Image 1 (cartoon, rainbow, N blue to C red):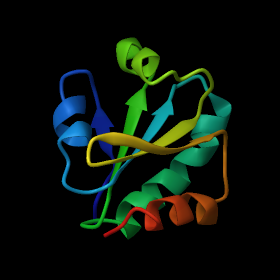
Image 2 (spheres, rainbow, N blue to C red):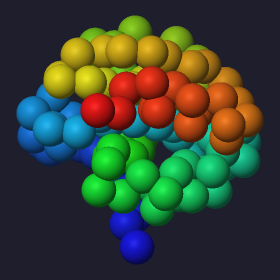
Image 3 (cartoon, helix red, strand yellow):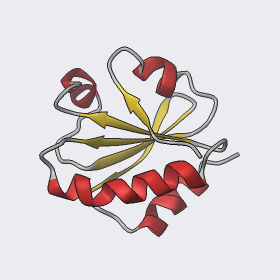
Length: 108
């Protein structure tokens, strides 16, 4: 059973930009109600895509430089990285199927 990876400024490049697999990054914050409601979906996706894609969480309050670099204006924001490049992006709470469709399009 895979858990989502907690990202920091120290491990972002290794876990996301240098990853061999597509990486879904959930930009969130503790105080964000919609982020908390999306959290169980993110956990399920981490388990479902184990070995095929990485699912990571980045707390925007603890890592503001990364959030700013990727232009995060509202949370939750989900960005799918592929080969270190920003791919698709979804802002706000979305149905699990929509997030899965975004990941599936980027699987090899």
